[in-house]
Length: 179
Ligand SMILES: [Cu+2]
Image (cartoon, rainbow, N blue to C red; front, top):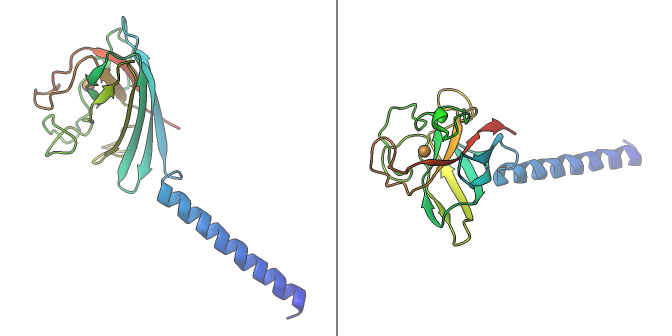
């Protein structure tokens, strides 16, 4: 083997190692996993709107929501069964996404709907940000959230009242689509 072939071989191995390191980083950060998003639009009489991203991270889905135009305080926030925001009050989105037939509840405590999420908390200016992890859902299949509705409610979710959490009217609606 002459010197130039040897150098080429070495360069190839270095590039391979760099490539592996880069893809390793990307999967740890979750940025390379499947992703989806939803644009939240106000229902009739509402000013709430926002954008929400969903990124697969292992067996969980990481949710990041930015919503504005809310009344200050907490708001129920769920994935609903149907990706249909056509009704002025967004009732067309149906009930909570619940493929397992569980009761409504808090996402971090005991059985709950797959679509149950932590509440949005709006500041005095009506802006809310939420980062949360969802378990028991996927992008596709029986537990799939792509093509379903995303709803922000006027009132807090009590995580007890069946099957809605008593979180009141729907103030924003969006459809979860693949990015
Ligand atoms: Cu809801």
